[in-house]
Length: 234
Image 1 (cartoon, rainbow, N blue to C red):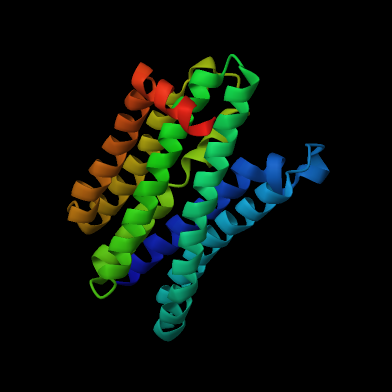
Image 2: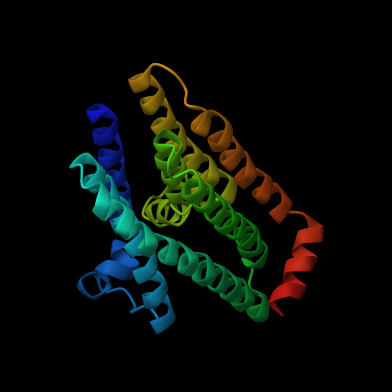
């Protein structure tokens, strides 16, 4: 049990580090690194997203240190934070798609694909958090569903890190989805090796989450989606 708790605490810490590294230039350290300041809305969006990953780490540490009462109390804050993430995430991705459509930019089709991916992320995140709350008394399911939910909002951090490289392959949405899927696979493999078996939450729900993002990508590049999403944001 103690090994289980340390694994989730370490994974939560790694997620916080990945989030900070991904958004250091555009958000956390933009003044020091000479990047443009984010808009007030993006500051709010970034603050809410940051609060979730920090809360995820705090919750994991509370479990590790047997502070179950505080873990339950902070769970109510987590539910409110999750709801805000879904609302702000949908608004942000719709606004980004609208800007590209109205500007008739060359990247409009790519951005509309991103819209499909990010809406799928929000749907997955909301569904997984809801399922985790419902199964809060089944601790092995609860913590893995919460971990999967948090991983589902990490692709944007992966994108920001990819932009720091010179590898052209990473400029394609399908490659970014694959890189994210690899990170999920690493977490699942480590957990499975540790417990000498694949937990159903990862084996069924995890596979479904990865498959959903791939499906969202392939839907996002279709003519039907381009037409519908263009209508949606105009």
